Structure formats: C-alpha cells, structure tokens
Image 1 (cartoon, rainbow, N blue to C red):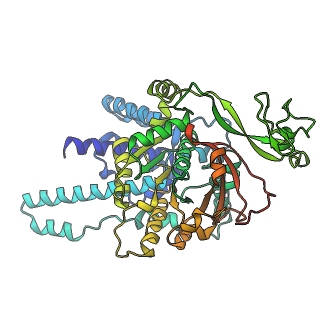
Image 2: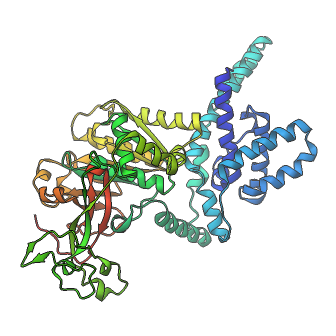
Image 3: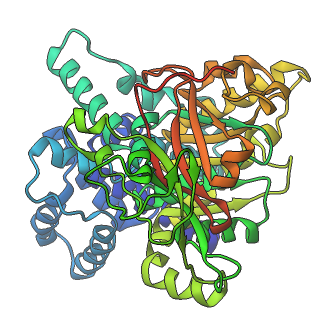
Length: 529
C-alpha cells in the first residue's frame, strides 16, 4: 500500500472511530458491516472495537465515556499503546467536544448526534469497508496462489460477497409503528429538526419556514434579478448558523464568488467618499406626522408629496409591538438612509475577515468553481468525497448556482432532461442527508408579470414534484431602484402559504447585501397581475 493510500486510510478510519464515539445512530447503522479487520491502524482498530462493544451492551455511543473505557483498558496495554491511543483520543476529542451543560438528557443526546451527518458517514464508511474487503480478498488470493493452493484461492473468490447499501440501511429503514415510544420519539425528532436546522433571518425566515436535511429549496426569477446574491446570502447565513456548507458555482469564477461573499459579510462600496443610500423600513404615520409617538421631528410627506430632509428619523417600532392592535397601526414604507461604508479593497477585507470569520470559514465553508456546463452529478459527488477524504469534512447544506446549467448524461433532450436534473438534486439531498438550495430561471411571461406564480417557472413545470419549497423573486423597475424585493412562495410541500402574498426584503446589491431587513404582513391584499 502506498504512503498516500495509508494516509487516506488513517484519515477515514479516524472519522469512523469519531462516528462510533459520538453517534448512536451511526453505530446502529454500521453494526451489521463492522469488522475490526477492515482497520489498517492498530490503535484505531482498538478504539473502534471498544466503542462497538459499548454500543452493543448499552445501546448507545460512549461519547465522553470513551475516557473511562480507555482508563479501564489501559492497564492491559503496553506503554507505547497507551501513549499512542491517548494521543489519538485527544485528537478526536478536539473534533467533537461541545458544551452540553444544563441540557436535559434528550436535548444533550440530540446535540451530540448533530455533531456528524451520520447518514453520510454511513455511506462513506460502507465505501471504505468495501475497498478494504477487496484489499483483503486480493491479498488472501495472492497468498494462496503463492502457496500453490489454487483451489482454495478460487473458492475464496467464489464465496466473496461485497457489502451493499442494504446492509447498513435495512435496520434503520424499519420503523416500528406499533411501538408508541418509538413513534413519540420520531415526532419529537421531526419537530426538533424542522425548528432547529436552518432558516433565513428575520421575517423572511418566518415566511419561508424552517428547512431541514433532505429538503430541496428553489428560487426562480428572470435573468439578472439577483438570484446568485440570494444564494450567497444563504451561504453566509449557513456559516453564521454553523452549518457546514458546500457552494458549487458553475456560473462565476472564483474571484467573483469571493467578492460577493466578502461584501455579503461586510458591506463595502466602490466609492467610500460618497454617502451610500440604504433602504430602511419606516412608517407612513411617522413620515406624515400622524403618529404622536413617532421618532422623527420633521414631516417628509405633505399631500402625498415627499420632501427629503436629513433630520428625518425612520420609525418602525410598532411592527415589533407584542400588542396586535398597536402592531396593526404600522403602515410599511421604505426610506433611503445615507450611511458611509468602507471601500471594497483587500486591506479592508483582510482586517475584517481575520478578526471575525477566518476560523469559521475554515470550519464551515467550501466553495467549488467549475466552468459552465461541466459540473455533473458524478463530479459533485467526487468533490464531496474529496473534502471527506482529504479534510474529513462533509456538508450539512449544499448550494448550487445554478441547476439550469448542470451537465447531465441523459437519453432525453426534451422536458424530461430538466426533470432528471431536479431528480438528481433530490437524490443528492436524500443520499447525503443535506439541505439542497438552488435557483432556476423564470419563463418569458415571468419577465413582465407583477408577481410570479407557479406558471412562470422556466422549462418543465413538473420540477415542483421534486422540491420542498419554491419561491419567486419579484421586483419592478422602481423597486429595484429602491432596493426592494418581494419573495413569494409558489410551491411548498409542508409549509402553509397563500400564493400571491409576499415578504418584503430590503437589499443593497451595490454593497453586496441581499437581506438588510424583511417584513411580512399576513393580512396584506393579494396583488393581481
């Protein structure tokens, strides 16, 4: 075995040991395929063996108890083994230690399980074990041939049966609906996952709902409306939410992606000497003087005429009031507020990035750029496998910019080609247990309509069968000038919505901001196209 292969093997075996230490679901999933002979590293074989023994006896992963297990077994090990296993456990401990103080046992177990994407870990472990099986078979056959025992070598090949995906999924796929404790736990976990996994900020997050692993979320709009900015904003929110996110770009080169990401994190402009105008929410009653509790001391609307006054102070405090009656008095309008921002240059980026985000990016973000029409399903999986094997890093969220130019090997060249693209996205989300987010183009009619609906999606309408949520990005020419975009849900599998009701999002694309603030009025009058 080459030194490179040995290095990869040790990296993969460390992750398997990590999975066995922290995840009961992982241990349950691989117990049928686990074989200590698959481990090439003696000390990782010992650690994983301890973990599997613990799981089989107590029906859970050891987590912090691995230290007690080590102390108990160290008396039977030589000094070199104790030292090397101790170093490995310290290294692994740095990968999974979290603060669970004050949490209930149920919440503590959930936090621990979330440390790894156990379904993806199982799939990668199966792949590694399959390769190890083949290595062992080849070695056994070679040894028998060298001894001159051809019949036994042939028998070894004849009886060989490669592990399959069914070996790790059969037990986990069986749901004991007759056991109410199991059903209760499934409902609790469903609620936890839907609430805690990922959502966008502010009112937009409440409007779109919570996204969970396995979901496919799509945004659509005419060309040049800001779809990529919405995806970059999703990337930034995922990083802030401490979700490992893999961003595939098949439209922009790396410098373009980098610029947009940094501007999304830290608003920067091309000319810092001039005031930059950002849209902010205000209230009509604050602008025209009708409100007695308003922030502004001046009136900027008189007989429907707007008069700009630098002394004006926006006020939207009523929209946050817990009293619904007071909240209903808020009449949303948008005001342009002058704010100075730093220049977009490397010095500014370095100063801000090193201080706040460098460590987070290393842990939670990967960006992969491919030329247009070259990214395939196999290449996406290869890029994901590379991150796992090289860095022991696997994604919680995958963002694709964008699906319409994803290359696909298909016998079809009509609407079924597009259908297969979306099927592949749903397949990846399911196989890797990740949230998948992408964008797609609107059709010709969508370029002229006021509010996009489900008939304005480009290409094959049946793509909606493969998504959990589809959202249109609505914007008139005047709204683009003001920095306003209306997000409008057109399809949702399990989230309530009324087509035509939208969420108002404030933006400043020139400063790299796709979400400055958002507001949703559930009682708004539905706009007619």
